[in-house]
Image (cartoon, rainbow, N blue to C red; front, side, top):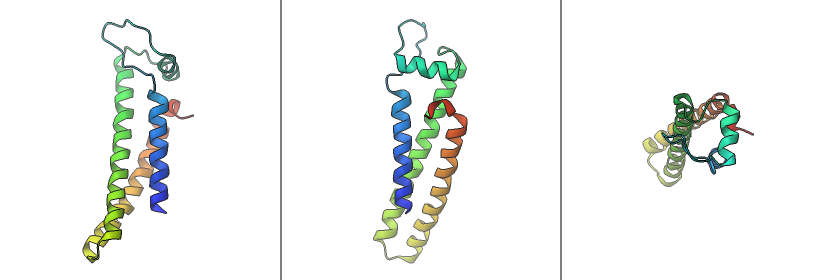
Length: 122
């Protein structure tokens, strides 16, 4: 069950990351050059000018949160492998604690992402 939740959550994050950043470009300091339609749609949804500091911070915050979710998913996956491969009771206990806390943190971060970046979710 935990593996299914982790896999589903990872798929959701990766599809969101690809869908919202495909074709998007970082604004350059001069402000020249055409932006792809996907990036312009994202900019319109956020209603923040692409060359502004808030827009860059918005993108940086979203990417950091996505990175934290993915790192936590990898940690849960490693703990699941440990749980299945070891006979040591202390390691099994530690792995189970990491799985439980990691899944809780993943759920919390996914909810935060949904609330903080609603324009990025279809």
